[in-house]
Image (cartoon, rainbow, N blue to C red; front, side, top):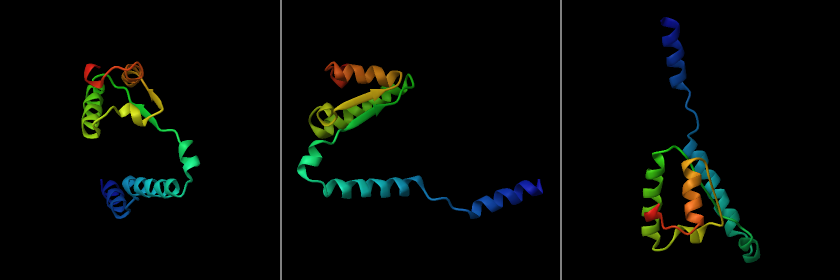
Length: 105
């Protein structure tokens, strides 16, 4: 037990870099690069959205998408050129591609 306690105590000293910090830095850099692009380069950008599967979690995903659309005031599809998904997420993506409203999915 003593060796386990020492192991746990030594781990608490090491502080890994938060994924949120790395994510924020990557996003900031991407936005800076996008800001420096010419209008012709910006026209070539493609927005991709990916939907995860997971059965019942698809209902949560639909509620989140519905809320985002309410905040935007228009379809989320106006912002994405490519959609993909796995399992339930793929079914949601297919429904959106066919033009189904999120509230009916």
